[in-house]
Length: 164
Image (tube, rainbow, N blue to C red; front, side, top):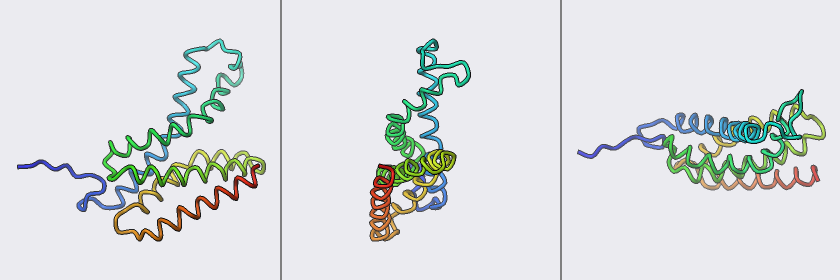
């Protein structure tokens, strides 16, 4: 007898589980990667001039943001695959497009409301990944997926012009 493990995209598993798993992955990858960078860098060089008495080594967070946000997108794909969201690569790619647009909007919002921008950045994965998980399900029309990806790219362009 063949042992077949059910995954999050199996017909026997509800789409809600796929979306819930994608929400968890999107919600934890960016904060985890950024926090890991800060912890590792503060352990490697605790006496760095970038570390202060009052803020500790939070300056490393700014450095982590430049590269760590893109690393979090790469880390999300194997995590989605490990948690049985199948196929995981379309979810990761579409979520990457969505989250890049959200980050660009947050960058434009930074001049108006720092707290709003930081909140948007913090929850960007929890917004983008479930949307991508839903839009990449087999029975969702591809025109709808195209509309949202196109809208996301247009939003990115508008926010880029506003932030620049």
